[in-house]
Each structure stands twice: as C-alpha cells, then as structure tokens.
Length: 379
Image (cartoon, rainbow, N blue to C red; front, side, top):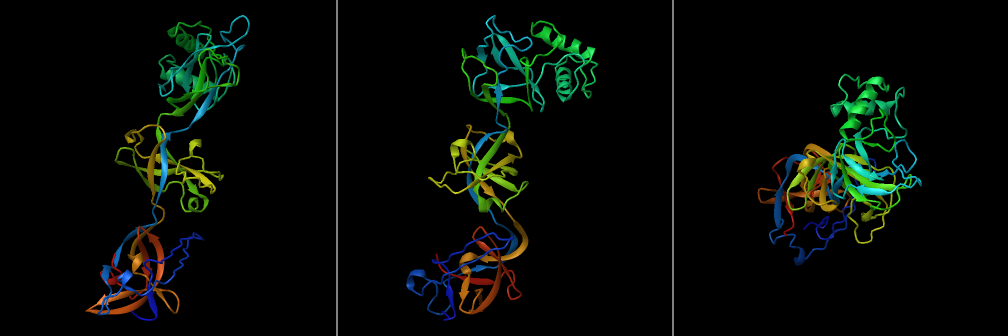
C-alpha cells in the first residue's frame, strides 16, 4: 500500500453534519495489517466494486407508531342549556357513551346526558351557541349542510349561513326522525361538530359520572390512519413537508406516504405522549414531532400505536456517480480518493465527496467514469 494513503474501513468516522446542506466528513486512517485484508500480496486491493451512475438518496430509518389522525377531546356542555334534559336539581349525569374503539358517523350518537343524546355533525367550527331562526354564521352554514346531507334539508341553500324558516322546518324533520321534541332550534347540547367520521380513542368519563360543563367526555380521533414519529432536532432540519416516505407495517408489508406535518417546538422523548416512539431507552435529546400522511390509509392495518419503521427518503440526487463508502482513502496530503483498478494495475484518484446514502457516497471529478472498478477491503 502506498505510504500516502490508508483505507478508511474499520476506523472510518463519517459524520454527516447538516450545515447549509453540506456534509462534514472526518476520517481516521486504519492500520496496515492482516486483520483488515486490505491489500493482496501483488499490490491489488482485496476486492473491487464498480462506479455506478444513478439516483442517490440520503435515506434514514427511524421508529414510529401507527395511529389515527386529529386527536381531540369532546367536552360536556353540562346542565342548563336549551333542551339540556337536566333534572329538576340541575344535575347532568352521563347515561351512555360510545365505547372506545367504536366509529361514529354523521348523526351518530357520541354520548347521552340524562338520556338525551349528543349527535355528531361534520364541520370545522365548534358548537358555541344554540342555533335558531335569524342566526347567521359558519356554524349555521355547517348545520344546513348536514341537514341537507341527511335528507332533511331539501330546498335549503347550504351555501348560505343564515338560519331561515326553511332551516327551522328541516330541523323539525330531523328532530322528528329521532322522536325528539320538534322545536325547530338546535341546542348547544344537541350536536358536536367534527371534521368527519370519528373514532373513539378513549372514554374520559364513565356512565354515572356528573357531566359538568367543560369536563372531557371523550377523546376522539379521525378514522384515517397516520404514522407519528419523533426526530432529533438536527435530523428534523433535513426533512420537509411533502417529502416521500416508506413505512414498514406491523405484520409485514409497506405503505407509501408523505411528511404531513413537522412540529415547531422541540420536546422531550416521551413515547407515551403519542409523539411517535423510538424512545431509545432513555434518550432525552430534544425531539420534533413529525406526522406522516399515508397515500392509501385504508391499507394500513394494525393496532393503535403499533410500532412501525419509517424510511425517510430525504434529499435525492439524480443520475450521480457513486462508490461504496468503504472504498474511500484518506490522502496524506488532505482530502479523499479511491483506488482505480485497471488492466491489473492500481492508480489513486482524488475525488470530491457529495451526498452519502445507503452505504454509498457521491463522487465528483473528471477522472472517474461509470463502470470503472475501485478497490475495496474484503469483508
């Protein structure tokens, strides 16, 4: 082996430090000896590998959990609201609640207070008032859209946010279908708005408990599956919303997806918080919560919070030359090179390093061509 260079295998320390998109590489030269099987007696490398041209990605595999989207709580309205159904003493008692793990769709029951159901309607504006003729707002518009979707709002203009006489008539039809008092008004304790079908994550209150105003009754999620994970702050800076990922699912199989959201605040690594797992056995480094939206969420099967592996594709370089990382040489004069094997001879070529990914490294320089063989230590 040349005295000017040494193989990096065994003691190679490649530190990928993201700083303005670049990489810092620190190498410690190995030692010449039989243990590494680095060079044959005839001076040729112990092994060789081709220089290839293709796409290179800086993929990283991390642990995550399979869960459900948009976790939130539904709070009790309590006694005293319009049509609250409270007893004479003013108490509000939870008499039924949708069981954990169940799914609730539009007009389905979420829970009952004093025997009176609270039903799910779709919309993003929460219930904050009783609705009656003359009221205007986004909540009225949502109510009209739900009545129309359920078949009670024939002729209603669901694009308008005004509670009209026609709206009151539609409400009465809806109330009649549930054998409720036909008031033509909707109380705060009659409905709850959510973005779509809901899944009951857990019951925060048990049947028989007092349903005091503002007290959580249910923790809900959407029915769509998502994957949550946590990344070290440094790694979080290398991904962005929309980046493609591949998820290894419980029981086998994979699912494709994209980074849906990246948290803006670092927190401690607490897998029980639903952040995503990858606890690392007491690793307390600051973490960023990341959520993955699956391309076909219906195909993602498995228990809630089941562990999964997530392959973050990261940056992709198209049609670049690359060599195995263990083919690199630390040059005595500084920088890195490879041994090109041609016609039974070896020559050293200095290279400029680019991106690392999947055990390979991008190399730049006019001296290397696709298909050339470079020396590598034997395994």
